[in-house]
Image (tube, rainbow, N blue to C red; front, side, top):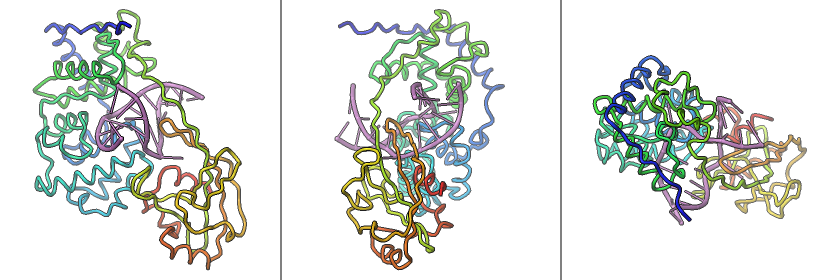
Length: 367
DNA sequence: AACTCGGGGGT
DNA sequence: ACCCCAGAGTT
């Protein structure tokens, strides 16, 4: 089986010069006024890049300012309680990012005197700094001539140069990073890198690209070939996993009963409602509440139940269907359960200071 | 290289 | 409903 042919893009000097000057001029006038573009604080820029990993600008804006208000410096983040860091992240998802962020802050305090090092190799050694984030912080926060490739940049390159590369493989990675380095504008790497991403985010969009607004449309090979709709090649689809769970909002006057996720596995350290997995919708399992933990049995102790219509929640390739109900807990039972290490009884007004997953917060808010 | 991440907003 | 996002870490 022949491999799909790859067209190595020819980069003649005139083309490179046009792409650079046209895109930079466009970016100077078209850049969105994003809050992290108003600061030169490396920590604030770093925080934005971590929050933006696999997460859209629209979802990040509110979180970024709130996080900085609470933990404005690397020292403050390093010294903060992990629960506070995770609580500030609640709803953003991919909570490993928050743990890596704090671990990196602690290492920056220990190794670099609390200041982010202006050195790509040193940055890349920090938790949460992969190739993209290293290039982004180096170029945007420190003005270093380092390239970056994200989903936007790869899409722009695929269209500019009519690249037919299987996404995320070795050839895809080498081609995109090679192009990013070759095109980089060394004396303004931050502006160039952000201009590439901005074009991908606002003009060269995955569907319905606005080629009429593109400053370099006349140099776009996919445009010339009428192939903007079919490039870049789509990623292979992952099979969707259906998950059915039953969750319990057990509440007494003293608060809501929560369980803390154990270390390892999904959402370690986050609080969630007592939950058990169902073999099929409406088919109760044999397990106790909360099914995952093998801890005290709740079922005999609640007074009345309110059913809620099933919650549906999608995360990556999981489709989660949650049958939730609210039950009243007798105060004595609540006290006994809260005294066991398996449960925490949390007053509603304290919930916002705890690390809750988005799904957990959604269910609690619905009752 | 493939898989996970128990999010979420735009279209 | 589907797409895919300013990806990184693990296996």
